[in-house]
Length: 171
Ligand code: ADP
Image (cartoon, rainbow, N blue to C red; front, top):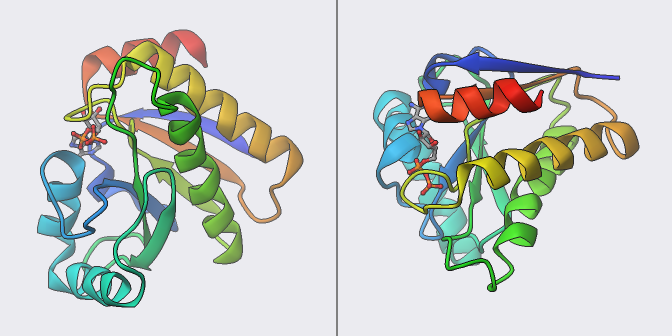
């Protein structure tokens, strides 16, 4: 069974094989962790995102695509689009779970051994943090138990103290 790690900090310095980006459906970059990844990763990541956009028209909520890591220490960036919290009746929970699940599926296809996740949707998209953490951990654990072939370590990287404390309690 793979190990699950909790880290407080900035995902752009992670030297895992893959990091996950909380992107938006345009794939053209934005604020928060998305902005940090594009800023530090350089123009190559955006070029690859634009090529994906031209091919398939962006990325739907809950789905994931990947690019290289550009100038970042990771080999791949897996871009997934989290749901915008809208009260909880718009399938937000299921869509958030899909983000983690589909990112891990791509990681397996890429033969990734180590992967790091940010706290998807809990920033600008306002998903309640406690519930988002429960969904993240449950989805990752279920994937590791049932479907995983290549991943040896999953890190949750919490940038804000509130998320870190929630994860510390749950893991
Ligand atoms: P979303 O639009 O999915 O809510 P945000 O980027 O606004 O995406 O926030 C998602 C999470 O990413 C938040 O918990 C925020 O604290 C965190 N975050 C912001 N910058 C970074 C970073 N450099 N590394 C890791 N996590 C980050």
